[in-house]
Length: 258
Image (cartoon, rainbow, N blue to C red; front, side, top):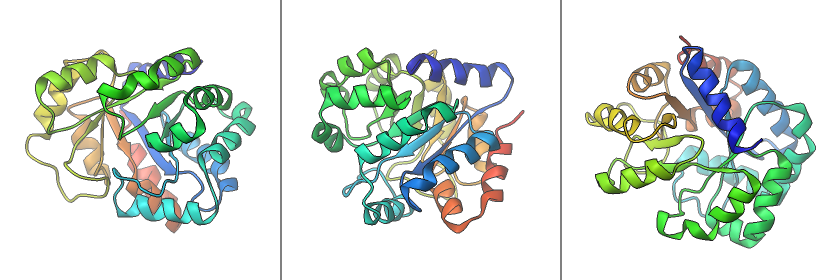
């Protein structure tokens, strides 16, 4: 199913009158064996899809919370092939769409074609690569299309309109609207132009527009969801799982419900 499954699932959430909520988790934080249970918990708590980060030694888009989670996973010896193998093992046990977030170096090291095939076999529906610019995506797009894996593009607040239009036109699954300048992590507030920026993006694509980076409270979820189709929440989910505060995660998800 892949890309089709991701897009159909997100449209179904919107058709029900709810906003889309995509939690991010770091694969291997707490050991790789914890991953299936974390996925099940988030699915049952009401996630629309789940973004799974791959631990990497140079995570340029990640703030301190996610960097620390990645380091804990790396200490456990977790790698991209390990995560895909674990997802393949547990594919039959889940229905929720899975989106992998990784950087381009691990994909190259794996081999682009082999990576795409393994994603398909593991039941991965989408892929986010923050350090892959539009100009270089031809290196991976054909393999992903063959495997029916959606390439989710990121839109930045600082990008010129022409570039945002191109990103919006090309994105698959959803458009990931970065709501801050800088790395991931909790923020007290957002810039005043975030609302108009998100509204403008929704006019550029038929795909859902999800706001991410810095979304860390139920109030943030409600605020940003006024302007787009939902949110991606990373650092707060990672911290709450690590601290064992799962009630906080449920509160965040409840804020996305109609």
